[in-house]
Structure formats: C-alpha cells, structure tokens
Length: 249
Image (cartoon, rainbow, N blue to C red; front, side):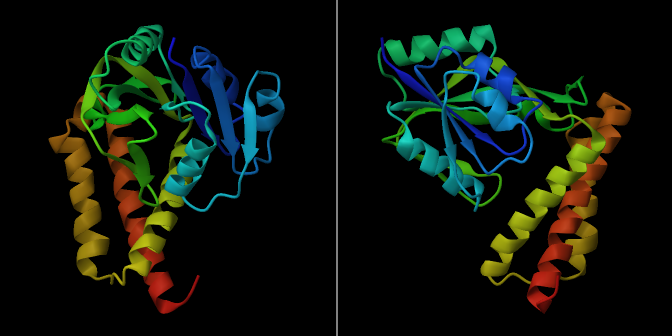
C-alpha cells in the first residue's frame, strides 16, 4: 500500500482540529503545523497520533511548503482545519495513490457551509482546490489564496469534501481582514498604487459578481452577506495598501 502524509495547518482551531484529524485518519502520517496557537488547538491535537510542528507564520505558501518538506511520504494530502474528507472522497484518495499513476495531483471540489448552513451558489458552486499531490512535482506559491504550481497532469475527484469555512459573521470578517492585510502587503511589494477605481468600482463589481453573476441571490439572505463581505474584503485590501504606501498604520 502506498503511504500518504496528511498536513493540517492551524492557528487557534480548537473548534475544528479534532474532527479534521479524524477525517484524515486513513493517512499514514498526520502533521499539524501550528502558527503558535493561543487556544487549546495543540492540547487537543496531542491526544491523537500526530506530529506537531510549531512555526511562526510568514505566509500561507511558505507555511505549507515547509510542512511538505518535513513529510515522510511522497503523496501529500493538505487539509485546512475547517475541511472534512468525506468517506467517498477517502475511497477516491486511496484508489488514486494505490492504482496506476495517471496524475501527479488531484483537484477536489468543496461543499461550502456558512454558519452551519450549506451555500449552494454565491460562487462556491465551482469551488475546487488541489489537495492530493506528489510533493516531487508540486509546490505552493502566493502569499494569500495560495496556489499549487504542478509540473504534470492533474485529475479530478468526483465527490466533494465539506468546507466549514466561517462559523459566524464576525469570523468571516476577521478572515477577510487577515487576507486583505496579506494581499495588501503583496501589492505594496510590487509597487501597486491606489485610486478611485480600486475603492469604488472594484468592491462594487465584486458584490455584483457574487450576488448576481454567481447567483448569490438564490442563497437568500446568506447570499447577500457573502457578496457584501467579499466586497468589503476588496475595499479593505486597498485601504490597507493605501496606508502602506503612505507609511502609516
């Protein structure tokens, strides 16, 4: 049987960590790479047969690439703490690594939940990520909303994993602020500027994309919240960039 290393990046994930670990119990090695959580994340993780690595967070790609370099096995499954591998996807994972090698990595689609409620539209109906891959051919790039650069052919799993991304509206806002800060830093390093287009047109366009084009109105009030918060994230990104460019906080 081909062996798999599962990697779970964490920062204050006491609500999710136990279920996350259990959902990748099929893996031969489970690594929890933690950015110095201040809650009970590590205390809970220590109850399971996992390897814990503490590393100061610099950006999402560096954190994951470091964990990958520490993994014993070639096949890697990356699991965000708020994701759950379903039994059907587990079967697909095991079949992929133990069968004839057709691909060097696999996309998996996600069923998105907001405050415990399934979101069927709002742009999440097309949500997919590379989660299983051979580390020899894949690595992460990008400071936020990191992507995998794959040197080879990628396949798709038929079934979906569950994604419990935002447990409350406040949690959603806090994540948008976190992502906005990292993205603003990235843009600042590239010498990007800010104008009216970035603070008025781009946020408005983002709202329209999620609520109208991506059918968020079919998700009812939740669709409005998603579209509004996505627009807020864009606006906040450029406000933070403006402050960085001016040398203020």
